[in-house]
Length: 313
Ligand SMILES: CC(C)(COP(=O)(O)OP(=O)(O)OC[C@H]1O[C@@H](n2cnc3c(N)ncnc32)[C@H](O)[C@@H]1OP(=O)(O)O)[C@@H](O)C(=O)NCCC(=O)NCCS
Image 1 (tube, rainbow, N blue to C red):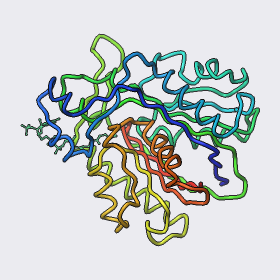
Image 2: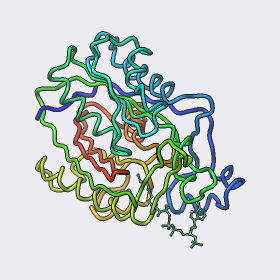
Image 3: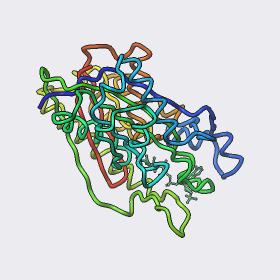
Image 4: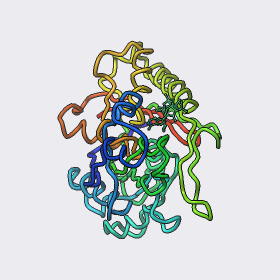
């Protein structure tokens, strides 16, 4: 299958920084406990910003950097499990906000922390029959609004933010992906709107076991599909930024060289569908991720879902 040619990325993080130290004033926790188990020091929480604000800022940045205008976009998807509204979708509101044409294919999808890669795959498939050749895929989350801020098991883990990518179909190169799901209410569940207040319920140990299993498996499958012997044959690995220990565990199992697996959860926590595009954008802007490089990406999370893709930059 042909690959998506990513033209540019963008990101937006809310201004308010919430440190572990600050959280320790409301729940019984401390920086040492949180950092040693997760690699997280701080995260961003929205104050006034909506999910649409985050998504629009990231999307505008990506489109401007790619030199695209609204009339280049044929598909606009938002991956999120924390939309501002059950309906209208964030993608539909983005259509208006960005002035995209009315025949643009716009919808949200929920594949939790694997959502951005599900979005990339879906948008890529839709592009073959879309009215225009470029797609916009945004991962945007306001997780702070579905968290129980008094539950120390979960409130230290997550953050808000958005990342975006614009791409064009590239007929020249091949694209290897893996996708999976395993229906499971017990490991991670987010209470929907209704009489019970929204909250994230998670069996941390079960999620950890699931994550290390599917991340390693996905990476091995992608390497095999690409005909590569070692993970060190790719230039960068960008996993969903849930937890540094998950990433370190998998990197060690695969014998990865130092620094191959990118990490930025120390500053943002787990931003779910936004984490991979935020990471890609940081890597591009710092000059680490350059044209021609081969990047292996893997997402995993609630559903349970997982997804992996090899991207040529
Ligand atoms: C969540 C996670 C960090 C918890 O670490 P853990 O070592 O498994 O810790 P446990 O859940 O066994 O809890 C150990 C103790 O620490 C306590 N604890 C939990 N959160 C705490 C916090 N923020 N600060 C201090 N203590 C905390 C627990 O209450 C428990 O206390 P107890 O022994 O008195 O009952 C870990 O399981 C994990 O990283 N899981 C993966 C989660 C994830 O990435 N989810 C998102 C995937 S998309």
